[in-house]
Image (cartoon, rainbow, N blue to C red; front, side, top):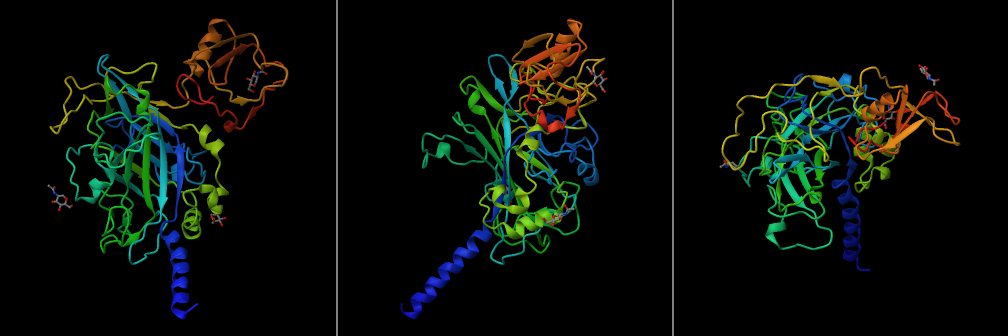
Amino acid sequence: MPPHRKIFADLIVLLLLVLPYVNGYWIFGGSKPLVTTRLDSIISPGVVSSHVHSIVGGSRFSPTYSYEDLIQSQCSTVTVQQDVSNYWAPQLYYYDQGQGTYTPMPTSFNIYYLSRPGPENEYINAIPTGLRMVAGSPLRRVNNASNFADQAISYVCLDYTTDHTGDPAWDERADFFQHQCPDGLRAQVFFPSCWDGVNLDSEDHQSHMAYPIQNYNSGDCPGTHPVHLVSLFYEMLVSVDQFSYASGSWVYSFGDNTGLGFHADFQDGWINKTLLQDALDNCPDANGDVSACPPLNAVANDQAASACQPELMIVDEPIGTISSPLTVLPGCNPLWIGTGPKPTCDPVPATPGFVDAKSTLPSGWTQLGCIAEGSTGRALSSASTTSPVMTRPFCANFCANLGYPYAGVEYSDECYCGDTFSNGASNITTPWYDCSMSCSGNGEYK
Ligand SMILES: *[C@@H]1O[C@H](CO)[C@@H](O)[C@H](O)[C@H]1NC(C)=O
Ligand SMILES: *[C@@H]1O[C@H](CO)[C@@H](O)[C@H](O)[C@H]1NC(C)=O
Ligand SMILES: *[C@@H]1O[C@H](CO)[C@@H](O)[C@H](O)[C@H]1NC(C)=O
């Protein structure tokens, strides 16, 4: 081979080695919300927030908390149990025009951790301990296509069977589509990755962070915000396809039916920052896959993530379910159509209080925990029922009406009653994560 060919071949090898590092990333895919409630510990600390959010991550999410409180979380709804950060965004509802009702649409999140340096190839740092930030704004009513903060909010309409390339009506865009999305809607938000190096939060929850110089999603950091952090990107996947597009519309919990007001919040809860930096430094080839990154894989537990339940307070009000939609969005959030100011409420609705997220049982009942059944029959064998809207209170009331002191839910929609544990079941609780099926009536675990 002539010498110049050899050099060319070496260059290709080098490029192959460098490029994957630049694009190194992992995804906490399919993360389920921990809770859906009218709280926002960053924008409205300690009080009921103005609209309902879908909140992912650490189980000690609370109306107000510190990093130190949060890292006491028992579990996280993201697979890596050493990350009890909270990730949240407004809940998207389906507004049924005929019925005048609002139904919260099923939602899950893909949380991306991306290494996105620019031409200077800056070092990508772990998130500083306790960082909080917000991207986007519920007040935004116009799109400025040359503004990085606006570019950072976008939508993708999912259709796995038909290729819509070249059709502008299906292009990734800044606001809601004007047609159905047959495989769901993806609402996307890219957080700024450049930190001022000093402040863990700021008055507007944004100005301690900045987008890179060249682009909203990659590039070198400006002198005002010189510390390049790992880039956070959320995809909120909403099952809009389960609701008729012809007879309704998509409305955020704050009344917005344009989609421009999408926003998201992040509260750091990485327990071990060395672990996060280790993953950033050493998993250039993870290609999104947590299991391809040994330090993350060692602390990943999908079962714990799927069983994870909120430990503290939620707001004491219904947020709607598919079987019982709302006629009014929680808070003061009338339908907000067009670019005018947000409509007001007269009278202003009363503000509800907080309730323990775990104590949803009727009075007189206490939770004993999760028990293992024996192999010869039901642990509680005196009476039973099933229901598509099964919850722990539903089952407790059913058993109480028949005079039984014990009630237990199983397989999502089954309820069993008894005076004692039978058929080899012992009165010893097993770890909470063994009860990993959610109740058919409210998605709560039992
Ligand atoms: C749009 O954004 C660019 C870049 O941030 C800014 O210079 C410009 O003033 C904005 N335009 C409007 C109408 O706000
Ligand atoms: C934190 O993570 C590092 C790197 O993965 C690991 O070596 C260390 O043991 C962890 N520390 C604790 C307290 O778990
Ligand atoms: C099970 O244990 C609880 C708590 O120790 C106790 O109150 C209850 O009486 C026990 N029930 C049975 C059926 O043994």
